Image (cartoon, rainbow over all chains, first blue to last red; front, side, top):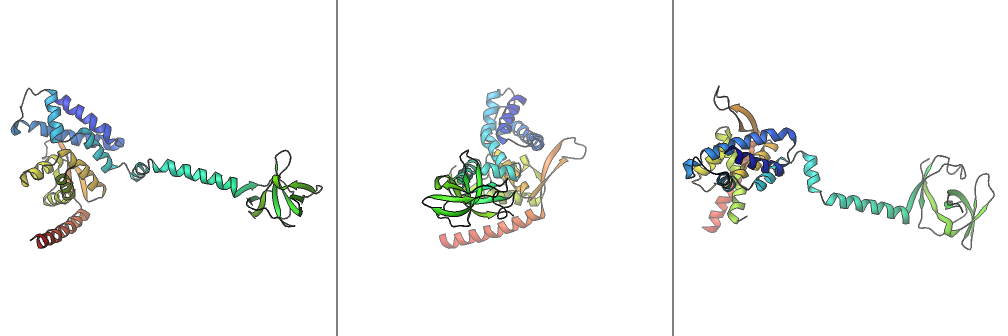
Length: 196
Length: 109
């Protein structure tokens, strides 16, 4: 008789997925209940002795419930704390929203605005060395005095001050360097904010 | 789940709180008391009682203590007791129940 109850409990506990500190108590409590149920079975028309394991299991399932249903019910009721309940609730939604945030983040960086760290002094005093700047990419009109970010021929991102914009080519000045011509295709965008 | 089971699930909370207001009980005792005193109407699958007890416990409407069945009996059981919050919840539920049954009688005659 003991084995059928233990087997039944094993199945319930698998589905209940409880925190270790709850496991012992719940198992002991259910075991007491099932033992009393089995002991009282004789009085309710069931055979008292010589019941097979299958008969006891069938009785437990009809009187107490399917182990899976009971286990899942307990799992839902105890939850294992707010965080676990919250995670369960968001099991599918959470990865989707994280992925959506990442996609949104990279699309904004790629198409609209991107932050850059400024390691050099090319655009001082407007942009001090060590600043972080936000470069707005949806702009195609530049005026003299705008600070722009562009890629040089090696692909390195540099900042410079616009002198003139003529026919799709900007003339850009940098501290300590000769003015250079930068085609619009190499321009990333205009600096709209900086941290210093 | 059929209609009846859905309905029973809704009222089981109140019934359990009501039983525990009389005296602290352990799980098997609650299940048999529900079945016997309702003449079998509330003989719900006994396993469904525990999710209900644990959920009431986590809402602090009842609290559990492991106590010996009788002094010196050696066997310890989980007894459930009503907390003050559970007492208030039961009062509120009974009031709602009164209003609902009265309303239903008035409508259905």
